[in-house]
Image (cartoon, rainbow, N blue to C red; front, top):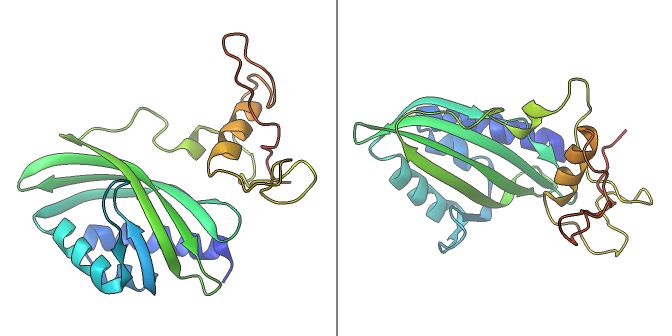
Amino acid sequence: MDTAEAARRFVRVWRRAWAAHDVDAILELYAEDCVHRSMPFREPHRGRDELARHLRRSFAGERVDDVRFSEPVIGQDGLAVAEFRVLSEENEEPRTLAGSVFVRFDAAGMAVATRDYWHTLPGHTEPAPPMFLLQGLPHGFPPIRPVGMFGEPGRPPSGRPMVEGAWLRCGVAARRGSRPCGARSRRTSATVPRWGRRSR
């Protein structure tokens, strides 16, 4: 399955299933031997059984009011990332959770590895606008994809694989008319990579 198709299905099912606490529907998105990290410093949940226990434990005591996911951003080698925002009540206390999920899909479109990065606050509030990064891009731009200087998808001049998000930050800055990619800042000695470009 095409990565973009798999990623769109992933966010579509997660949005509906999170609101309904439909663990079975979520598990159908994952490979049997999947590895899920719910937070950077937690031990990963390995396989569908561990993931199912984690989901049921997370959903216990939660009542969901609203779930939003961004359109996924598609990378190379089966990688995709999407942002999310959830308004809920946990033990009758309103909470807001916002974050992002990184996913690697196999050839069949199943999630084999996922990593969540998120933050939660008491009460119902919205992230500073725009809610999702892609909403802040000028109208009419095509989807962002990693493209190397010499046309090789997702490869910087060094030949090392891109770090997820580096090409995205560079591409967004260039689109908004700020300092071009590769320009050296007057305030710091940091150089922004030249290899972030949008696809055509």
